[in-house]
Length: 74
Figure 1: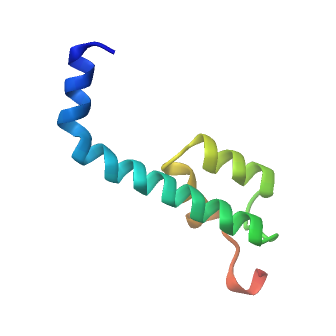
Figure 2: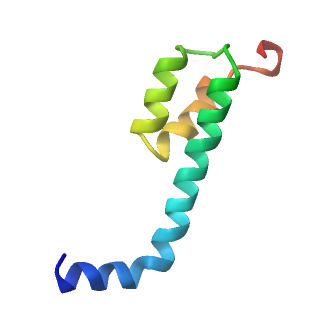
């Protein structure tokens, strides 16, 4: 890592940290929900785990928008 990369991290640390915390939190909540439920509007458990893990911030949002089953499905 050269000086420019280090300076970049120092300059943007206050912005990067909350984004990283949000990303990990969303992923953990989505994975917890996926493993606690068996019914999904579209797809199956393996597909949703892959989407949530691979597409980090977007994956959990997509799951909670289109994949999460309704309250009656639980």
